Length: 370
Ligand SMILES: [Fe+2]
Image 1 (cartoon, rainbow, N blue to C red):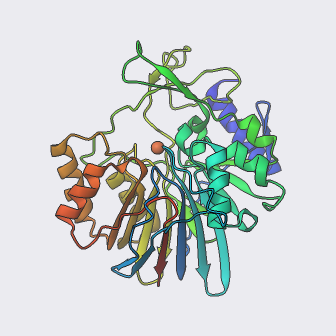
Image 2: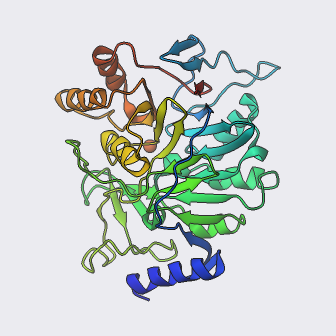
Image 3: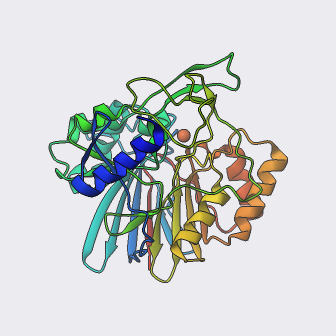
């Protein structure tokens, strides 16, 4: 089946059957392309389940109305265990509108044992989850997913869905800067998700998640940000359920091509009276682009918070300065860099926006309120 036909088939199947059998892979839906009604919520609480470090001395603080509770020691009662840290990100996000409460998880860290360990120590309840979101197809964001499901599927509601930005989330990736020097990057195989009775929804267009959140859909690249390839991708690897109509026949001849992160999407909330909270997990598509896309699809211009990984760790100093200046122009109340944002980003953001930056670590809790 060629790409176009297959995608039409996916859409038709999703429309007819809800959870379609698509090219041999069950449980795939395509999100509706209709414009969304962006929900407004009263309160948002975000727990950092996985980041690269646990800093027990991080102080509690309130910055422009956003409350940060540092993780503290976060040890087990017998003192023999503590939070695990690794390259990657995972967030447990609870929201409230009047008396209505929702919980979603955004990304799953690199490995399941670390994620499961921290869920236990931080006492978050996977039984509350109404939706799972994977930000993009990199293993430091989906690596813990299957093990997480294997461990908790019995308590997670039966109808939970995994929301991904698009089909190329599931392509085979290789790490490295040139085709001659690549190392394995991994693949998120949809069959492993289906085996856990979780339907995957491909959200190439903005999508409301669990009544309270929304995703940006595909993010346009229209800022000064340079979207450099961060690795390579094979769009044809057999078994990975990865076929993507964006690519030409030449690109689809079994060779690795530069990864443009076509599918990366951001998860957002609109806090009543405060504006947007935009969660970018890795920001390969540009953090300014991501925020602008959230503004465009929601019609909400006020940016309350920019949170997550901004992928500026390896950025040259002059470029970093420019990006931070562009972030400042967005006038966010707070900027909360995590994961791949980089120490240099934290320092530059503090220099340019001294009253707007919150530093977090694994175990931190952030609260945003109307
Ligand atoms: Fe990442």
